[in-house]
Image 1 (cartoon, rainbow, N blue to C red):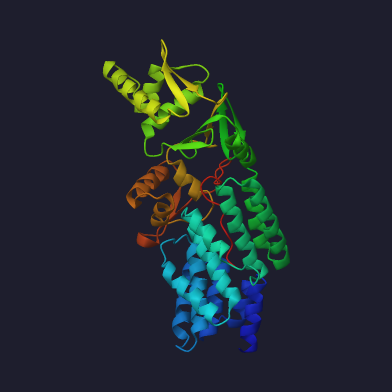
Image 2 (cartoon, rainbow, N blue to C red):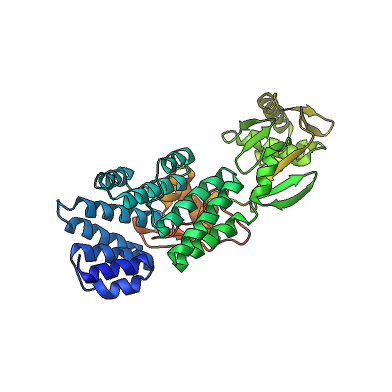
Length: 406
């Protein structure tokens, strides 16, 4: 490796992409193309970065398997930064295997961390945890170790393990300080801000207040009967009943929870469950049927009794009923939560992360764009969507903060 390539690599490791480009900007050999690609990624030109890294991978000869594998890892990191979550994971896994086979433990570990990060972004927490558990983070340089700890913190936040999240962020802060790259330090500070932002609202006895993530964890660990509108489940006595696929029943459960210890009027329940401001005997009949179904679902945790004006929730063992709601509730809130990380997303990546159809996401984006809440750039498959962070809106219950490009 010649002196200019060595100097450019050291500049990139120190977070100085302009210094690296000054040394290799006019060169088209494979190592220079790879370094230029990484430099452009650090400068934020992800489209150019991806093209350069692909050119570098093609320029390396068949005998340079390690160099080609490193290009694949770098391209995967660029794809994650640009929220292209549909890139072939098998290619990254093959690159990781190649790097491990040739003794490049640091880059192999980095590839594993990228796999875990992608799994976290698309909500596959169990697989992400297994991938991290199989990694040895010791060979990672400080910059990559910072990203690794941010993924650990992200999983912990999604699992509502705030002590583990804070411990991981403390390790990330130390690694970022050791790396001496300001952008990494800023990423850790951003993650801490998210952890300290309101994660939910508590609605109980007609009053509501914001909750930090630690407080949400405490509420879920309490003996209260909890109607969790963040995850569409009902919790109590160590039992969790999911109503995510039964929106009418969940709407009734939430309305009853918000009215507790009093009863909820039939008119209120009809409006909340069926979206109808007008009601007649057919609505009342349908309400009785749905309340019967809710009573059957909740039979181990609570009863739903009829009153003169409506229905009342009566928990069997809990002495308190509370409702957990998102900090900001509006139509298409899940899409806004993903976009609130400040990164640009494609509609396909949003659909993958939300576990829904791309067409549904496109309709939501069109509605949000009409309201001026999101904006797009590019055309066709290159079209991306983004929005500035919404004040008071935390992505904790959906995604961790964005991770840096090393």
